[in-house]
Image (cartoon, rainbow, N blue to C red; front, side, top):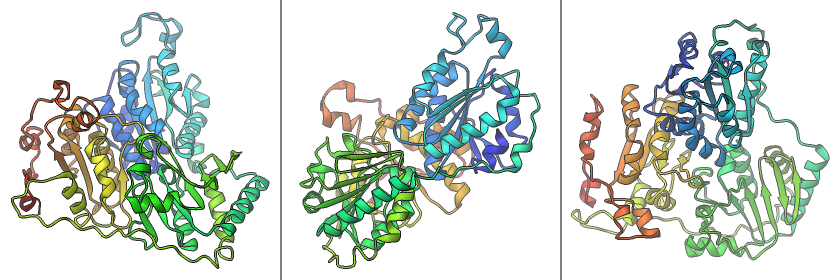
Length: 510
C-alpha cells in the first residue's frame, strides 16, 4: 500500500492513530520519502487530504474504525461532490473479531461490522473491504487507480490482523496504469464532427471553463482550444485558476446575473457556448441565473459529452478535446475575434487611514499575487470576493463552492502547503479565512507549525458569520462568535519563526 502511494507521488499521509490502525501506521516509516502528518482531528485530516489532492492529483487519509472514519465523512463527502481523488484507508477489527460478532469498542454494540463501510459506499467511487490476503495487492492497486482516474474518494478497509502478513511484491515492479480507457472511436468522431459543424456556423462563440477541467486534467487541452480558436474565454467561480487570466482572450468570471454587465452580455449573447467541465451549482451560477440566448451549447464532461439535447454517455472530454484541437485550425480560419471585456483593475485612491473594505481588498490583492501561487478561499466573503481578483499566470485557486463546508479552508491549506512544498519549495500558499470559519478548524495551524510549513494566513475579522448575516439574520445573535486574540494564535500553538500583524486600514495593508 505505502510503496504504491509513494510511486504515485502521494508523500504526505493525513489522519489520526487509533488502536485498529496502529500496526498499519508503523509501515509508513518503512517507506523512504513518506511523511505521516498526524492531524488534530479526522475532519481536519479529510479537509487536508482534499487540499493536498487539488495540488498533487491524489491523496490518502488513514482513520480508525467507527469513531475515526465517521468524523472524516463530512470532508470525504465534500471531495465526492467536488471531484477530488482521496484514498480513505480505515483500520478495522480483525477478521476473527468480525466473524464472532464481538461486542468491541467503537462498534454500535450489535455485532454489525459492515455498517460504517455501507455509510461510506454512498460517497465513494468504489470500496474494498480486504478479507483475503492473497487478493489484497490487486485490490489496493484497483482502489488507487479508481481514486485517481475518477477523481472521487475510495474506501479501503484493512483488518488489523492482516497488516503484518507478507504478500508478493511482484506487482510493484509494474507501475499502476493510471491512463483513461479509450473512447469508442465512432462516438468520439461523431462528437468532434458535430462540434466542428457548430463552430463553422458560429459568428460569436465563447468558451466557458469550470471546475472539472482542473479536476480531470483537461487544462492543457482547454488552453490549446483557447489558443487555436482565439474565442473569448471565461471561467466560473469554481473554475477560477483553470485558465491563464493574463491571456489576451481571457474575459473574466461569469456568474449569471452576478457577473459584471459586459461579461454577462458577451456570454449570454454568444451564438455558441463551449462549456468545459461544468459543475452548475447554485453559488457557481449566481443562483441558477444563467440566461443563454442560444441553444447551441456543447458541454464537455469527464464521462460524457452533451451537444444541444443529445448526450453521448461514456465519451470522455480529454480525448475529445485533443481530437477537436487537431482538426480545428481550418474551421476557425475565417473567425474575426470579438473584443473581450476590459479587465483593467484599479483600486480607488484612498488615504492611508481609510478603513479596509472588501471591495478595495480583493481588487488590491491582484497586484500582490505572483505566478505559481496557490490561493485558498473559505466559503464566505472570501470565496465571493476572490472572483474580482485577477490571478497571475499559473495560479491555483482552491475554494469549496459546491459542498461549502464552513472551516474547510484551514484544513485544505495544510494539505495544499504540504503538497506545494513537495512540488516546489518556492511556491506560496495563501489562505483567506473569516474569523467565524477559523474557529471550526483552527487547530490545524498547529500541524502546519509541527512540520515547519509556512503559508500566509489572512484572517478577515468581520466579527462573526458575515456571509450568514447577508443571507439572513443580519443582527441575530446566532451569527455572532466569541472574539479571539488572533495575534496570539501562532505563539499559542508553539510557533518559533513567525509574524503576526494586525492590518486595519489601507496604509497598513500597503
